[in-house]
Image (cartoon, rainbow, N blue to C red; front, side, top):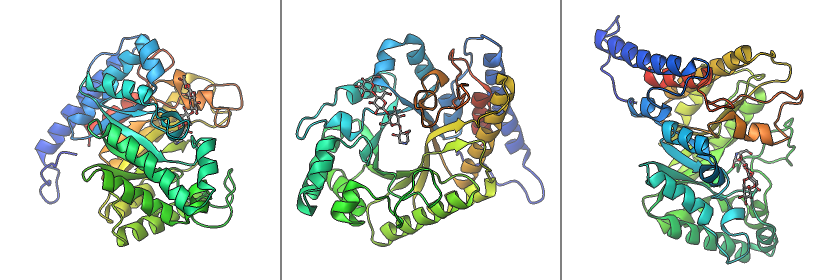
Length: 383
Ligand code: G3I
């Protein structure tokens, strides 16, 4: 966020106000124009509005859709300044069989971005999902094999993408969900994964050290979810993550940033100061904080009409984005851009149970900007 002069004591400096109101007006105009029913998106994209304030906005993207859907590609060209592969950077896609690597889909995303001056961030070197069966079996053979398999994957992926991807989620979802979650975890603060069972808690630090050995300047990120809302469950997960992070920092593990996924749920309470203070606690450890997978899930039975639902989604997007900005987040990615292709629609585990379809991303089914788009644009413009 561009540093703005501190307002004189007791008042707000006119320049700051004027600047803010002009920027917000631009975002508002852009948003308003685009929000006319059926209006083609006019005016600057979200990444351009963000960039005006030294912020980065991007979105998860699928290589197949970039190639097959011109409206999808046009929406990403207009709105996303940073790309993250929705699944093309994961172990199951990159190394489906031991020693057999396939970078074609990841490279398609990277090349599409480079041709338009957009960077791609990496997701994810180590994750218990999209972890192919051959790797599960291999790491179960014991610690030496597990270490060798992890080292080979990290070395090959980072050496192959070195010049093109400068920021990676090295470990994704390492913290165990607290009791009472819908995915019960055996006691313990770290998720019970094949690599935890093979190597113990040190697998996390080992993964980061292996990544750092590959590349001295890569930004290495620890990414997780369920950290955002004002519930005892999320509070416990934040506490667990902070314990993990403080231990890694204390042991001088090469960790540069924490990624907060932000798969928000409207039915859960959200407190701006609680979340802002959590971001500040992470930054106090010397870490950057990114919002990596923002989308917003409605509850079942939320009002039928789009206007009411989009308003509720936009209000949560505004509160969350503003709290994150207050905490010092500078990079925001949504998990997709377009409702039509959201995992919230395609994944039965998170889809609405009443037959309605979630509207949790900035662009609607027909790629038009929604209230959520305007809420984020105005939050960026006012940063
Ligand atoms: O694998 C095929 C691929 O070969 C084919 O080209 C492509 C064509 O569409 O489809 C691929 O199928 C599936 C893909 O989603 C299509 O969307 C993959 O099999 C399936 O595993 C993949 O699921 C992804 C999931 O992670 C597992 O990787 C979801 O898209 C993605 O939204 C979801 O994202 C996760 C984040 O990584 C971590 N945080 C939670 C988030 C939601 O679960």
